[in-house]
Amino acid sequence: MWIYEKKLQIPVHVSKTDIPLAKFLITQYGGPDGELSAALRYLDQRYSMENNRAKALLTDIGTEEFAHLEIIATLVYKLTKGATAAQMREAGLAAHFADHDKALFYTDGNGVPWTAAYIQAKGDPVADLCEDIAAEEKARATYQHLIALTDDQGVKDALIFLREREVVHSQRFREALQIVREDQGQRKYH
Amino acid sequence: MHDNEEYIALICELQKVSFVLVELQLYLATHPDDEKAVTDFNRFSALQMHLKHVHESKFGPLLQYGYSPVNYPSGWVENPWPWEL
Image 1: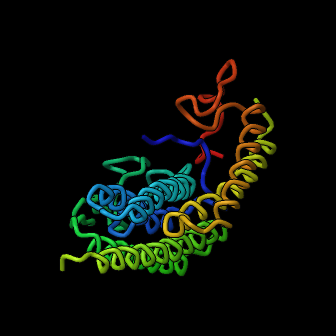
Image 2: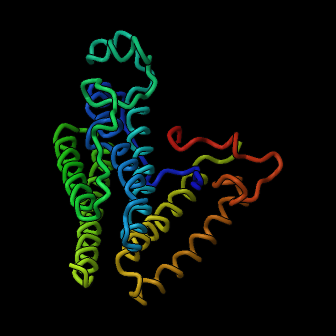
């Protein structure tokens, strides 16, 4: 069961319409290391995770990722607000406009649609947690690149917050991996 | 229609407190026996409930499915959506 709360995790301010910036940012919506990938990966891995602390962590981080997905959506929505077809075309979003107008869609920065091939669930706690740590580091690096591409202070602030969350998530997943390894080490059968 | 500035200010206060709780929720997943963190969590949980009550009595529900009481008219439909604020 999930419950929606009618508020963003952080306030999101955008100074002006900036369609090229929205085109970069969309990768954190539906790209390989984006927030949709993160949320779906973690929530899916819970069922075969044997350790209770790791199960709790996947649930809590997976849920937070949906809040991050909404922050990215808000940024893209605000950056493209009032944009005309001509402006979308000028920013390289003519193909997006043809299929979606200004609707948000789960794609990367090149318009490639999201695929479950971006994520994995191996049924092996160590393999899955290692994937999760790597996913957080890849998302952190993507946010770093996006911050370098941005001159809008409001967008920058939101991206810096999101980058910081990836650092915290990575840290928590590292702790979970340690817990799982200790757990496995205590078993007598191997 | 309500005062937008006050709506945003109250949401902002909630966002600060909610963030502490998100952070503590994750921390407690890997450190469930940290007594101080549990105490902090419950202190901020009470504060969050208070701020949520203040916001909702003024503007209407923040949560779905009965986790917030509704006014008449409910406010769920009319209040601004987060991406439009």
